[in-house]
Image (tube, rainbow, N blue to C red):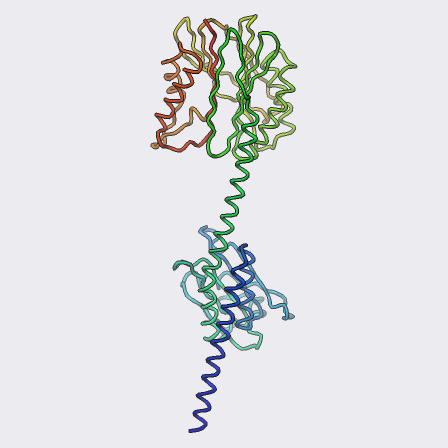
Length: 430
């Protein structure tokens, strides 16, 4: 009778000791997790505590992703630093079993377990395995695995229960760290976009050019995401002005930085040449040297000469010039072939001349206009732009742009704007 009481007491002491150890592990994990933001450091901590809790030689965590071809993407592996054995790999056929069956796995002896076809290397290095799923809100987000008890015994049901408790706590910790990293990345991106937006806005002209025979007006509406639209005016001497409208491929800070280079090069190039085509050829030669190979720039360059009464223009892959002939009352596009800047050093550019007759209207624009979409995913397109321009072509340049802007807003309604919108209207005064 006395022996039975002693045995019961020893069993109770063992149970209480085990419970205290579990609480200590979970408490240590919770305290440490409260100071860690990075996901990788959080995974390291969980593996470290798991190895210590079940006295394993090695442990690892594999995070589950949504990718079908690579569901186990992130791997954090640790070995007990006091162990003399080198870290070893466990094949994905074991972790795959946990994913498929959605439950813990305990292998007492990998070499004799008929469920797995282990390699000779695995049989040599791995004796026992304990593998439990990590869940968050009922969904498996990772797999926690330990191998080989340092006592050379198989893992026990108590070990599985403890590791399952650690995994249950870890799901929330891992997701919290992921959300923290996502928030920090979002703030970093917002800062980069704000900086890029500042760069973009600083490149645009602060005031409109004033000329007796020309009325020039611009409209620029930036999208939420930084684009690569750029326009500018160049005083080329008495009664001569250069006008440029460009669009850098891509979005974000890289596009804004390329815009900075474009403005710098164009400022030095524009006044050295008498023709629009030569300006683009020189721009192309320089940009082929300095821009990233995966980026390019479309550009329209206009040279207006009031003494000669001409507009000469050249295009590098840009959208066609829209021209309203006041004498005929016809609005049409006038395109020119030309490769975008920064693609090939061997590119050459054509040039076209149009007389500056009183009442004539010219409109240049970026693809943010023609590619503006509505909620039905229809684009505004060139035909609608021509129609909107035709309706008010006899009015002033500001009125023309105001009307096109209103038509765009009416078409897009509440659909989000995905790209910058830039337009320049040039009206020859009567």
